[in-house]
Length: 88
Image 1: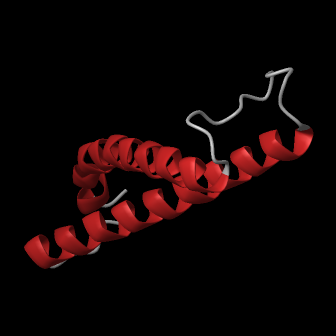
Image 2 (image 1 turned 60 degrees about the horizontal axis):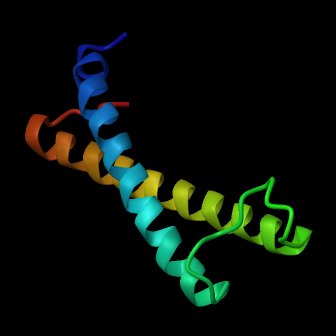
């Protein structure tokens, strides 16, 4: 394994935590607009329709994946600028 990849591991973990927080905040705001409710439904919420639960899960997954990819890519780009080596 390349040294740059090993050195990037702690940075990647920290960025993963940041991307999770960003994704959570983005999802909450998006659900307020799309679902017109304060809280998104849980999968076991008996009072919510299947369509609501699946829409919320799909939206949450898409936002999480996009946020993680954006933060990971920005982190890798920053490491390349600092070290001259791509961390992956």
